[in-house]
Length: 109
Image 1 (cartoon, rainbow, N blue to C red):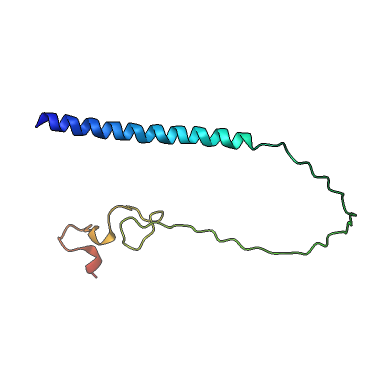
Image 2: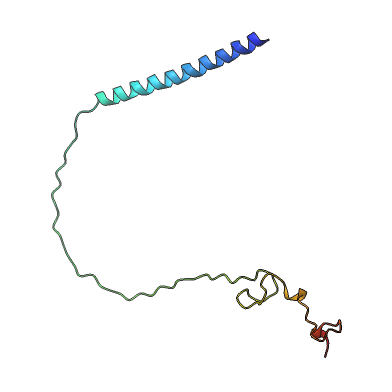
């Protein structure tokens, strides 16, 4: 069984190497053939046409640009982070009970 594996592996390596060699020699042959056809460069002389100059007219133009500013509200409570005293905790979870009676001051009138 091992001999078959080694045989097929060797056959695969040999096929891959031969394909690479054929491509290498084909490229080398193409480079040699393209070099034989070189006959020199052709120089063309171009006569300049008459040059007409005119003064460019200036027209006033206005352009508008859009600046995108992202205002963040990390905790999603509707107060922007720059104005929020605690930007990572939503306001619904902040409870104040200054008189210590167990009732939130917001609901006491």
